[in-house]
Length: 111
Image (cartoon, rainbow, N blue to C red; front, side):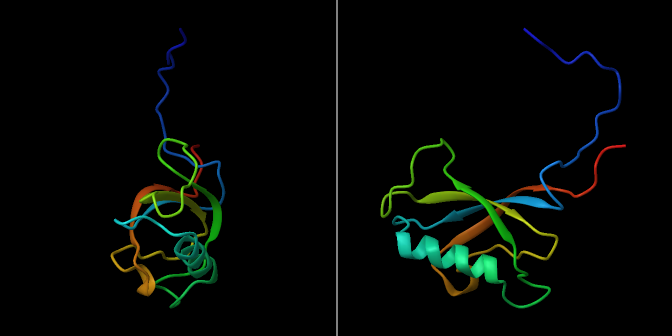
């Protein structure tokens, strides 16, 4: 079994793109295909500059890797890329989604 043996200082870094964030998107009663499509289009287009800038959707998935089941799946995770501002919250941009920032990979690489 391999294990970490280096005594070098560990740095947070990102090799995924300029800035990558993982965002959860939840609808308690189940996410419809139309609702998911609307969310992806809104995030890709952006809204108010400096509040919800456009991002590139790099991936959409579930926590377990299970397939998206329209009307049954209640949470999806989005990998979004872009250095602009993203403001998660309830009723995200007028939708039924509650969004939350799960992880933020900064755009600087370790020295």
